[in-house]
Image (cartoon, rainbow, N blue to C red):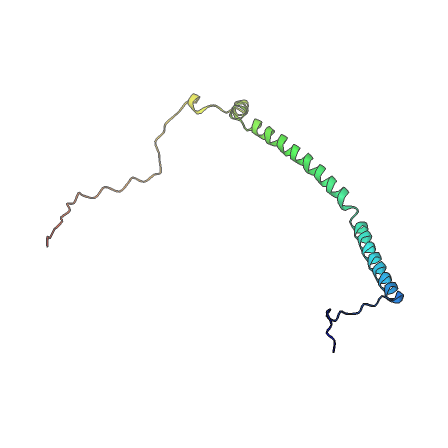
Length: 125
């Protein structure tokens, strides 16, 4: 028996029918992928314009928020609050007249207990 130098290789079917079947299979797979991609694009075609619109709205709202923060800071400044208080008839505490009156209706405190002494015993061991 003669020795073979090459191991047994599988035999490939190279007939026209096999190639035709493979070609048809690959074309069908390609068309299925293409239809899937076109369908996905069709279903998501409004995502990009909606995203741009949302970004535009976000920029406008951010600008409005910044303007409102500046306005609140201006309205809440101590000078502005002082002007408002003076316009509404309020006066500074330092400039008002102060009156004193005795407190009535408050019970007198209980008398302090008589002073007691404290005794301590220390034992050394």
